Image: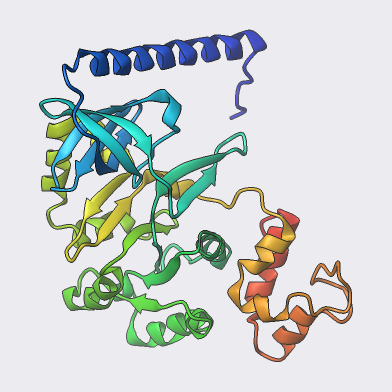
Length: 335
């Protein structure tokens, strides 16, 4: 179906409505602060969920507060560390956004970067035998992890769908990722003990699950978070978000000071605008060969004396990884 184009008048009307809402929120936040006889001392907390202007902020004691945000501090997202102060029982106002260590973004429909979650330190890429894994998408996630400077883990789910003979054919297709330093874990939710390896890699991290639709991310979240409904209820009760709690990017607590971010936004994840140099550096095994081609403007495709193609011929770079890079560099999905 063809998307209906908005007229200039409709676009201006939308902007007016959004500006009116922004002013109302700012006035509401200012009113709350002005009503405090003695403003509470600022505290540090973490945004665990956001829906519109409503923030669920967890304090250092683990209690969740329903907060609004001052308009001049930026745009808080799930995972942000913030300064906030109490504005009454269970209520608060976020007054400052602390520096982010990392930020996961994806382009919106207009191509602009949209933040999904902050302060993540591990991407867990989930794949399965069915649907057929897309290494094109997998490599995009890994490039995103490299650009963010976070760890990446490949988690192969639904291994119970394969016979022993099929596993021996399927799993070696991803061995080259392990050779360049990405851990690869295989598991089945029907085999509880097989999750032990994944739990070991989640320990001590703030991780987010990404992957194709249908690979079982939702089922995996439920398995990793047996108390998820309790945590959702706690957020809903504290913030009044109700059903919106499960439709927002949410930071859940795991054991051992670990966290899992569940985000509907990663279902349509794609890399945004990126130049060829940054893209090449996002393929970690390419880095020793960059700058060693015969021509300084080598596109790593048909040019003679290409160091990357020589590395492929020598077995140091998997040919599929170079093919993905070239497809991404051209801005086209392979046919």
